[in-house]
Length: 333
Image 1 (cartoon, rainbow, N blue to C red):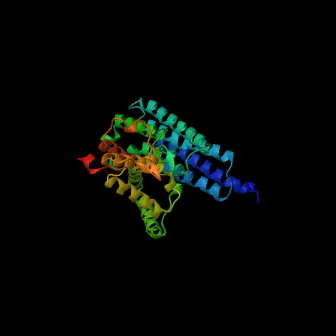
Image 2 (image 1 turned 135 degrees about the vertical axis):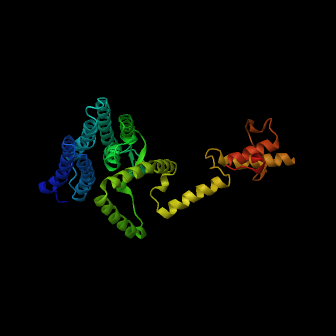
Image 3 (image 1 turned 90 degrees about the vertical axis):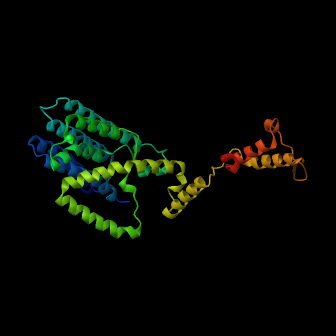
């Protein structure tokens, strides 16, 4: 295999450096009072951050230095820069915003450090590749600037009050260091029949961003927040059915429908440790209720254990139904 040339290896690192420069330029725009350009610069840094890793993998130019540089650039562009923008926005009105800015920047650095640590974990289930742990750095930075976007679009209001902005920033910082699963766009697969509609949607999204950038960014952030409950539900379902992650979408839907049908009919999943002996116990209880002797293949069936002593036939039978994971009509009335 041919080694990657130094020129090709430089390209993804150059994109990472451009993302960091874009984040620092956002601070310069905020210092001059141009908050619209500051938000746009953070958005540009997010776009550059999303493509540098893809370029590195496409050119087979991944390296340890590139990974470390990416984390440092993210800390500057999505941790330090948004924190300074928020502080400059309220400078002179509420000095407590500096404490909030410190909290946000610290949580961003902790989130990036945990991300690098999780990359070295080789014992994770395969389906976890579909999720991030907590809100990633670029959406976290844009979510923190959401009140500023609304203020620039519609003017001052309750959404721009210092207490609400401080509380919102701390909530976003908490989401970044939380264990809440969020979807990773890198692993989403699109069915062939949806490619054309999605491409049309991308064109409409690009036109909306050009004409109404603040509205488009704000709506995108609200949609991102709304997807978190779905991502949490999907993560928990895959944790219960890890074998369904690698199967085609049609088979995965069949697994979901089977689980829904079982719950609708009042069935329970069988207990793995007791199912093998449950049929034998039900048979012995049924024969005992009829006055006969339990028999096996070629002779009397010997059932040992204290489960038969002190119980009548009905109770034993109901117990056998429960061990099979079934409910009887009498139990539900």
